[in-house]
Image (tube, rainbow, N blue to C red):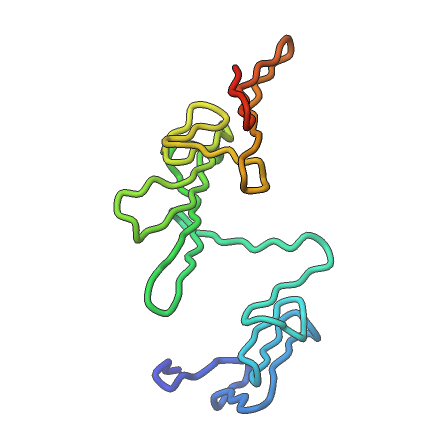
Length: 170
């Protein structure tokens, strides 16, 4: 058949499927189209958003690509953010998870390195569990910065850099 007629093939089809104001449901809630609200449900017959996926167990949304699958967040005029699984190395576990803004030319993403699990902010190849390129701001949570501390701990000792309104100590 010709796809030029926007023909939706189904067993024994001789014409197009036209829902008009009728909803489409397959197997009660496996797949549902709410044409009145322009919503699609997978696992639910009453989708609450444009795409609503439900499962009584652990819901998994799988994006599969031959290269680097990604999710793009955009408004009507531009792409705003992207989350991408970026295969940078060799082997099944070498995919890094990258968060970045494609509008910022030359921007370095936040990255979770696929093999080590290291997190990098502003770096593309973090060598430590957390590596940050640039300044880090510590705040007391109340927005007044009366006291903050950065603690360093290992199995044998502990160190701290702290600041209070009256003193700075190491």
